[in-house]
Amino acid sequence: MTRVATTLLLLGTAALLAPGQAGAQRSQMENPSARELIEQLQPGGTRGIRIPGQQPPSAPAVPATPAAQRTTTAPPGTAAASIMLRFATGSATLTPEAERSLDELGRALASPDLAPYRFRIEGHTDTVGSPESNQALSERRAFAVRDYLTSRHGVSAARLESIGLGESQPLVATPDESAEARNRRVQIINLGS
Image 1 (cartoon, rainbow, N blue to C red):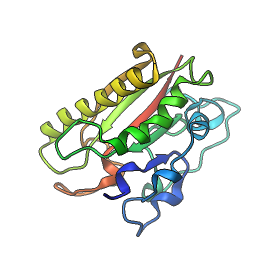
Image 2: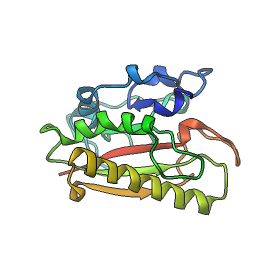
Image 3: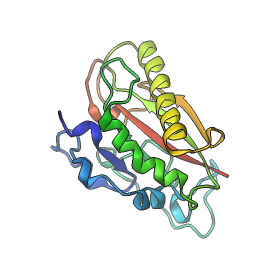
Image 4: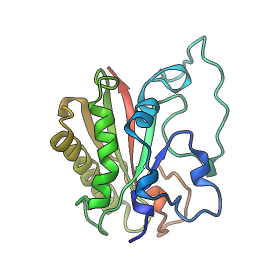
């Protein structure tokens, strides 16, 4: 089994997506800890929740990240993380590798540091298949992640909303019918309290 599917990508870890690296491979042992996820998902400084069209007066300008090095499609300044999960083709059933990847996230979301916040779980797909089927699949996968976090880690369902975005917001631009592992992800966005 490949390690690509169990890769957790965090905002700011551009080295993982360096050009020429096949699918940003990391082993399960290298996945970020709950503490690292907490740091990425806590609002504050330039990573906090941003009101569209406004930037806090004290916040320094955030340098643009080249598209080839982005790890989320969240708006600049938004606390977010992208998680690469392995699902069977066309399925929303979490594999054991996907569950292990979600365990650190579950511990982070259940922590006192993130307890005051709500989160959106966004399902994303690559461009293989029709846009309609990808939309439906992304919705089912986002809900499966939400369900796992609530049932296994006790995260309140009221703190989590799930949404599918299909192939509409690719991390890596590709033509139609392109199997790109980095686009098959679940993105977590901090929505504030």
